[in-house]
Length: 121
Image (cartoon, rainbow, N blue to C red; front, side, top):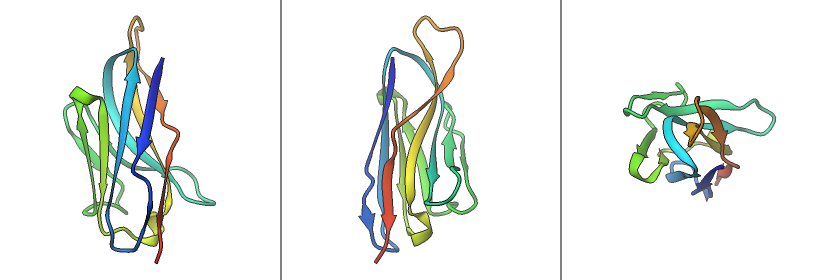
C-alpha cells in the first residue's frame, strides 16, 4: 500500500556533503512525523533526525550543526542534507514515516529499504 524509496547515498571523502531523499507513495491519507535513521556495521540502528508535519526538527547530538532535515509535504518527501561528513557517519541510512493510509483509522510506521553512505578517503 505504501512505499518509501530513498536515494542519494554514495561514497564521499571526509568533509564532503551529500543529500539524501526519501519519497513516500501509495494510498496515503496523512503523513505525520518523518525521520532518518542509520545503522553502522556492528552497531544498532540509531536516530539521526526527525521532522514533524509542522516542521519541528530533532537531531542526534552527533550530527547537530552538520545535518539538516527538511520535507516537502506536497511531494511526500523528506530530505537529509549532510555536511562536513566524517568516517563515523558511514552507515546504511533509512527513512521512516508515520502514515495513515486511506480507510485506516490509525497511523503506523513505514520504512524504506535504506541507502548506503560511505565516508572514506
